[in-house]
Image (cartoon, rainbow, N blue to C red):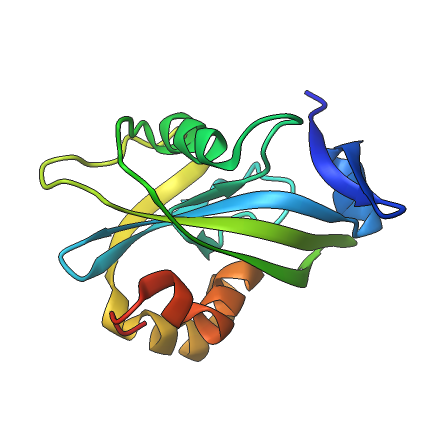
Length: 175
């Protein structure tokens, strides 16, 4: 399925097909969500069928908004689609920009609205196997150390978030 995402081309925002945006390394909109519980963060392992970074661990969920879709609506939609989680209150933290080679000749150049939520006890993800092959609750205080020790197992954007934006994302909680 071809999906147009909000992309800056020649200085203005316009819809561009998602794969084309990545092939050309165009700057485009994205969202990232981090769900927390009791000092842990929910990570997902990307399904092997994903067209980039398959099998790598990433933040709770991330994607690109549809053309005209609000970032919070997108974050809420993708939590449901990827992880079967609904009615999770999300707080906007910040907008960050990064550029990363994700392999296969593809570049993520994203302007990302980041959301954080607290997942209530008793609620657990029910991953869509087309999107997510595994989930894990990882102690937030040791996540940056784990990613630094084994970077090849984690997505480039999670590495960037932890290295450059952890305080903005997680506040006073060590990451």
